[in-house]
Every structure is written in structure tokens, then in C-alpha cells.
Image 1: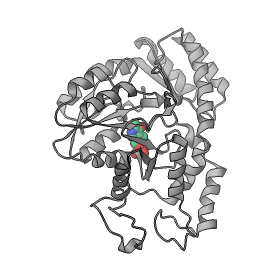
Image 2: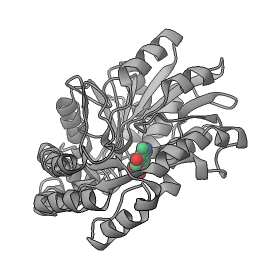
Image 3: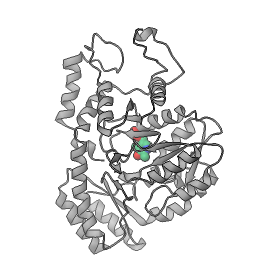
Image 4: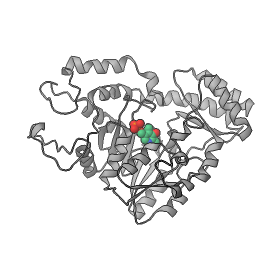
Length: 377
Ligand SMILES: *Cc1c(COP(=O)(O)O)cnc(C)c1O
């Protein structure tokens, strides 16, 4: 979440460089001479690849576009089914629907992660892919779900839009499944305003991403772009040089952001862990610590939410913005039978409050919040 809090001089300087060094070429492709062979989207992709230790990265216009391209690369089409969890963001469902396929919704467990037992019951011959979403900075049961998918030969996509920088067993989330998805929209751990990327270690998949997101362009080196060949009908999901410039500056801040998040998170955890149920971190994983989640009794919820609003921090997704993050409310995109799968998840979600971690706020504020809430609970 805190990327937007640190937008400033270094992002501006990277943007200025586009004008100083490469004549204001804002497009990621071609214009080789005019731009003096400087390609910022390509540079950003290389930096992501090095930082997260993944072979191939394709930057695109949004996280939603990234999910759509991932599904297209798996050949998802009409009458196929794609499974994902009810506690989610609408983007995954929209990407499935946009491919003409049917979203199938699983419940969540007590820790708000995808419920593997429910998932096992929902797989059919029509299941083309599973999208595991690491919600609010915390890892889902990636190892167990991965081995289940491997056994059943189903493509696994990690939607890691909300947990950029989080890890499982020393590896970054988003690099563990067949395909990983990041978003860099303005509410994410690092931001380019709008933007996202797709990660994979599979060269064939990468070549699909690269072509599909750019009208099918093969980018054959010996041909000028205007005479380039197409391998398929694609679309335009390109990232611009402006976004990449901002991303280059933001990625340098990610480690700092994660450290600062954790300091504030620790204050809340220390004050509340003996007072109430705090969302459990999946064993072996390290969250990105940008949200702190805990349970409250029904009669205390309103009081605590009111307190968080009054102190200027508010809540994140739970309870605010829940309508965009829970399939229970998506009858415009999900069929009745699937909506029924969300009823038990609602009971769990209703018990939780999510506190956003903001790093421009002094860490002592989070100490105070923890102590205050421990008295209200
Ligand atoms: C933000 C988000 C997306 C979509 O990202 P955009 O870049 O805003 O399109 C997808 N999935 C989840 C879980 C998200 O939080």
C-alpha cells in the first residue's frame, strides 16, 4: 500500500530523464534512433527480474490486464472454468468473464486464505486454471495448492497484486507458481499510477505474453516495427515509458517500505496478540506487512471502526471497500450457485477489521492505536 506515500523527487527525476536523455519518447517500442536506444520499460522488466529472481517479466498496463493475458496464455475460453476464492478483488473475476469462461468461487479459511479442501471439491474436467490470491500482504497455502495443481495438471496463477515483496521460504510470492501477477496501481506496495506485470520461468509463456499484450507483434529484430510479423491476434495492454520511469524509482524503495511496514505492524501485534485473534501468518512465509488484521466481537466492531476513522487511519477492505473485495456482492458477474459458496466466508470476514499501515505516519502512532484498541476490545 505505501508506494504512493513516497512518490516524490526520485520518481520525478526518472521521468525527467525521458526528456533529457531520450527526446521524450514515451512509447516502449521502436523509435530507436530518436530515443538513443534507451528503453525504460525493458529496463524496469530487467530490474524486476533481478530483484524477484524470476527469468521472464512482461510489464503491462494493469494487474487486471496481466491476469487476462495469463488466462489467454492458458487458452481459457468459453465453457472453461477458472477457480478462485471469494475474498478477492473483482479484477480476477472480470478477467475470467472477459475470456468467456465461468468463475468458480471457493470459500476461505479462518485466516482469510483460499480454502484448499473446498477447492478440491470444485475441480472438474472443465477447470482450466486456478488463481490463488495472496490477500492483503499474506501468503495463501502456496506449497499445498501448488502440489495439488501439479498432481491434477492444472495451471496455477498467483495473483500477488496485494503482496509484492512478501515471501514464502525465502522466495518471493509471485515467483512460485506457473505464472505470477503484480499490480502497480496507486494502492499497491509500489506504484506506477496504473500498471502491472506478469512473471514466469517458462519461455514459451513469456513469448505469448510479449506478443499478446502488443497486438501480436513478434518484434523480429531484422524488421522495422511497421513491417513486423504477427503470430496471433492480440490486444494493446502495453506499459508506457512514463510508468516504467516511476517504477524504476519505486522498486528502489521496496525494501525500505517493507522494513517500515514491519515496525508499525509489530506495534499493533505486540499490543493485541494476547487480547484477541490476530490473523495467522502462513508457516514459512513473511508478509509484506502493509495491513494488520484481527478479530473483534460484533458489539465492539462499530466502536473500533469509529475510533480508527477518528484517528485518521481508517480501515482497509474490512469493513470499508468490502463490496469490491468479496464475491458475495458480485451478482453482476457471478452466478447464483457460486454466490452461495460465499455465505460461510461472510461469517469469517464479518469478524475481522483490517488496519492499513501507512509509513508517512510516525510508528509511535501505531503503538498508540494498539494500546487504545486493546482497551476498547
Ligand atoms: C489491485 C488488484 C488487482 C488488479 O490490479 P490493477 O492494476 O488495479 O488492475 C488484481 N487482483 C488483486 C487481488 C488486486 O488487489
